Image 1 (cartoon, one colour):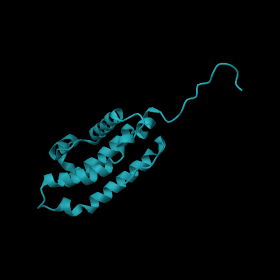
Image 2 (cartoon, rainbow, N blue to C red; image 1 turned 30 degrees about the vertical axis):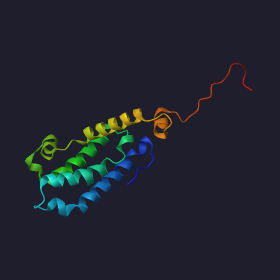
Image 3 (spheres, rainbow, N blue to C red; image 1 turned 180 degrees about the horizontal axis):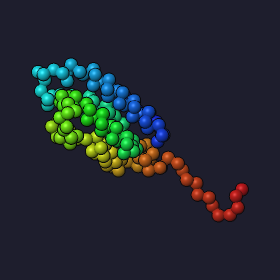
Image 4 (cartoon, rainbow, N blue to C red; image 1 turned 90 degrees about the vertical axis):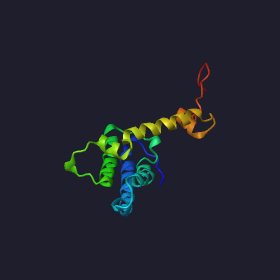
Length: 150
């Protein structure tokens, strides 16, 4: 799937790309979601493997605003509600839907993934490129000596 190098302002483009990919995957798997012979547990396993991994691919390096995290969570909850067949008039909260599916909300998944990546970065050797980038070790700082500039 891949991620692109982006600036903070271009985060919306990256998120839109992930949303579109997740929606495409969800539509492709529509025969599984609508099949009554497949158990809810199996559908949730498919969802976690295909859809939530598509939504969160590359999230280790994201710097999201609260509004962007809310949008991600709204899409996630919309998928889970369609998967369960929950209608809007049933008025189930997001926490209730997540509890029925035994799946976490997107902000919790994001924080767990970022913390796991941070722990990995701390254990990583000092010569590895990702650690150098994170801790700013790529730029050699030249300390100017005493005296006049030449």
